[in-house]
Image 1: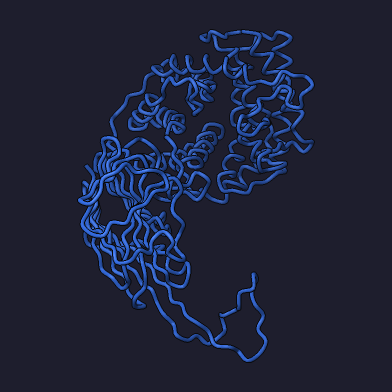
Image 2 (image 1 turned 45 degrees about the vertical axis):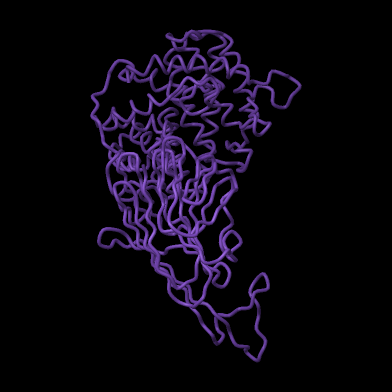
Length: 555
């Protein structure tokens, strides 16, 4: 987008200097030419190769203050030497922190390397140093194609990483044989459901990765219908933004689960899909995300001032990005109610208040007012972990949603003959007579409102069962009730016996009413999940069976 280009260039120019300072220039060090990562103490080969190509892209950018600065190409050449040393004979490289001889790591790398190689070809003046570097990059691409063709994957998103990288290599190297492997992936079908949710449900990382793959496949193979999947996901992502503009990640099946992350990584997805489909909402969102970028010098995010933005090659290869401004139309993602049945999740937002209901998750409810967040968990001391309320379903009811959980447990009689225990020494009980069976059955009905949520808890089954409801907050706010007022600290908790309380974090307040306390058995309740680290927890305690109503409001 024309209005973004100059700002991106400023960010990239600053990132160049920071990047050059990170390179290891000690010829006696095994890391020579690499860019050791602070948290690891070593370089990741794919990152080194990607950095080499990004430096070359800036070397060739006529608008950059580093244009044709030989320092960049020298550093890039050293980095490519490092990367080629680390590339195995089979064409794969290692993700040193966890995956070895990994074709998927090559795929992630190639997604940036081939477009960077095209920048080199487009702008090169063919000096000796330029041609030498270009030959190194081409060697890497050629070996990588073989590594991906014979290699495999182990997570769902890797399929689209590999398919898109093979498409890039097929077009760049003229290798039609790679198309057969791409078809193997595409013939499995695209794992994006009707809502736009990818298999791994990873709003923080892998949704974006899958979108990248679809966009590249559309570009390289002319399969523009693949952008339909990207479009569904990008519309869904509007509903995965919290009031503080962070991403909702608690439905993820991957390592971003529950992590505080922000959506700027989706910038390129919205940008390119907007250009290809003329979608005004996506153009607006690309602009919105771009304007979230700050000038904090140590920001290492995808568009941060401490990085080399990977999208610069797109601006150099596609004149329309530098020359055109897309027509934008505001999309209101601050007022909606969505029930994503397959994903087992409900999201309702009204301005700065948002309610999230989650099936299959012991943190079954999350309410956020501005930057203030509370999560709810319910548990009873029913045969160890059998009492952890983890709803098996979300069912729409009049005005709200019902979460249900049931566990039946008890004892077994002796067989009177040898019985083989299952692993870890536990007795095989499947074929034994059961006696003294008990049950714990819970319905929690949740009624989202514009400014809060009403929770109606109904537990049945065994009598006199200790139970607790946990309300988990971020620390650092002020707790205020008729009985006490204090600033909440990390790993602190309080039990509220009756009535209600307020919790204030910054300018955002959450009010809770309907407290109850009949026992002092809360943090240590047997079988329940341990307290969430670095949180402030409010406990309500009682005996099951019970019926309770809790009202939560944001201000």
